Amino acid sequence: MKSKTKAQLIAELKVVQARVAGLERQVVEVKHAAEAARALAQLSRELAGTLDLAQSTERVVRAVARLFGVRHSLLFRLDPASGSLICVAAADGRSREKWIGWTLPAGTGLAGLAVMEGRPIYSSDLLADPRITLPEWKLERIREEGFRSMITVPLKVGGEAIGALTLADSAGRVFTAEASGLLSAFADQAALALQHEVHHLESRRRQLLAYIEKHAMRVGEELHHEILNTLCAYLATAIDEENYSEAKKNLDALVADLRRIMNNLYPKDLETEGLLWTIQKRLDDARDEMLHHGRECTVTFDCPATITNETIMESLRDESHLILLYRVALEAIINARKHSKGTSIGVKIRSPKPDVVEISIHDDGIGDGGPFAANVGIALMSQRAGEIGAELEYTAAYPQGGTVVLIRLKHQHVTEAPTAAQVIAAIKSHSQLTPKLGADHATGSKR
Image 1 (tube, one colour):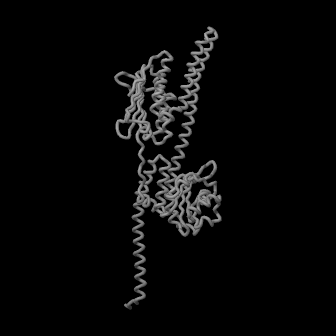
Image 2 (image 1 turned 90 degrees about the horizontal axis):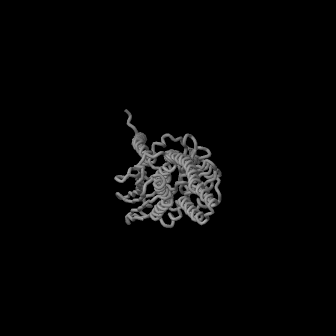
Image 3 (image 1 turned 45 degrees about the vertical axis):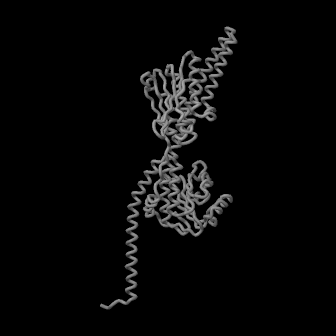
């Protein structure tokens, strides 16, 4: 057999090395695929268990920025009415706040183009790309941030775009077809988060409209039955008996009732005095109202000094939830005043264990903890309790009888986001399904 020349041996060696390198890449890809399947399932569970839209979207853009090593990542939500894109999350350590709420008019910017065409779009030079139209002030913002290369993929649900996910970096950064595939995997997760939020908000909107209407009817009935009917009776009596001094006293009492109703609708003292003082005042109002109708009532407020307004605020997810908590407690007090037929109403506030606050409203009436017939008041209490993440319980008050309404608040802890390793591994497999792109186009007190 003729011996091979040195050049032939070198050429064959290079072929073998290339095959070995190819096999090594295949091994790595197989490992990545296995890790991706597990990590993507983990990521899906994490996002599915997160009800807060801001937290979900922030997880996505942070993971994207880490994976690609870019300076900038934005996530946009599509406004169906106007077609504009609104930035809801940003990964940009220097100027994140500048981008949240940033709005792109319909069809403008790379994100608008990607949503309009329904495919990934890549631009190697954002400022020089003739396809992209932006107002001058927004172009100036881009110049300040110093990024030029950008890729955007649409967020789709059922084939319909509901937003866009964008990566941006300095001039010279190239985003390949593989990058588009990886970014699309993240976009899929973000789309699910946005879809969940949209459905949740629409459901809540319908529920709130229904409850607002019911509450308005309830207020109207209270004004009609408790104020107008009584007013007419007082005036008729005053005219018949010509007892105008007695009529003035009755009218003064009606004015006080009106002030009570209006103060319940708009509790200014909640803002100025805090929740604890306001609840005590509503107990006094309940006692005075019952006395006005000839019923004796004792009210008590029992709260240790260790529980303050600040303690309760720490158990709420948002400052705006304080008014909802107040209305749940007030509704329980009103129910006890109007329906229990008892002679005492009390409020007790305790912290049975760390990070838990319990507010109980109890009476000695005939309710014995329910069950109670469904009505607007109870429905509103349940609705508001659910909105602030509180637990609501009705139990019998022993041994004296009556009802206890318990509102349980738990300190809201933020769940940790998935690790970068999990997210990076999770999205690797998505690139295997993505077509290649062109060079510049990428698809106690007793009171």
